[in-house]
Length: 229
Ligand SMILES: CC(C)(COP(=O)(O)OP(=O)(O)OC[C@H]1O[C@@H](n2cnc3c(N)ncnc32)[C@H](O)[C@@H]1OP(=O)(O)O)[C@@H](O)C(=O)NCCC(=O)NCCS
Image 1 (cartoon, rainbow, N blue to C red):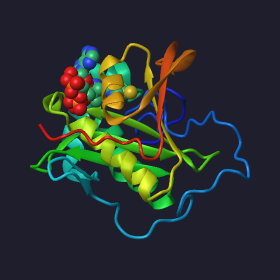
Image 2: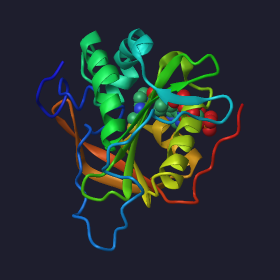
Image 3: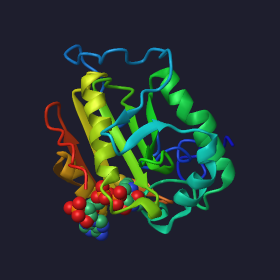
Image 4: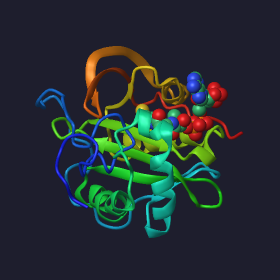
């Protein structure tokens, strides 16, 4: 499904597990001092990388995930704290899994992984997006399916994604944003090593309503991969 708009129902909102639609980029213009990350903005050959700590796996989404994506994105907490479409329909999942996610990898715009446990079943999404104006800056978004929460999987997944972004893409900074009050998301970010940087008043729009946003960041060398439980 391809629609237009900036909030629920837009193609970008169909894609992301973040408070902001994909493609949002309010950063300053790049300067000569910003070193581009390795391979950014270029067509990427080959399959998307699989990342794992031996228990949690990040892999490319595929058609077998569709039913689970629909259920997970319709979860009330995910609807409340992210910009996924509301209601979340199968066509949103089809666009996200079959079109948007592979395109993100191919074009170098970012990566969308399925978070999986040891059985390789879909348990959530992890997105790492590269800023269009500053290719040294990334931005993460995530959600965990209700049936997989509380096991530490999202924290491990976030650590794996950030480490890969620093080591392989050469990113200099990765940002986390959440609607103010999303304590579970903040806890995940801080466990992995993000530094909370503050509240940005009226920074985000959620289903037509302006909300305060929390922002944090992590720099190379700061990732702490949480131990397995
Ligand atoms: C936020 C979310 C991804 C966490 O997923 P998860 O797999 O349960 O995360 P983890 O198990 O890795 O860690 C969760 C941590 O948050 C803590 N936590 C959970 N709910 C919390 C709450 N309401 N307030 C404070 N901390 C909370 C847990 O205790 C745990 O910390 P601990 O390991 O110190 O005990 C999941 O709740 C979710 O998908 N929420 C809806 C979508 C969302 O908010 N996405 C983030 C958008 S910015």
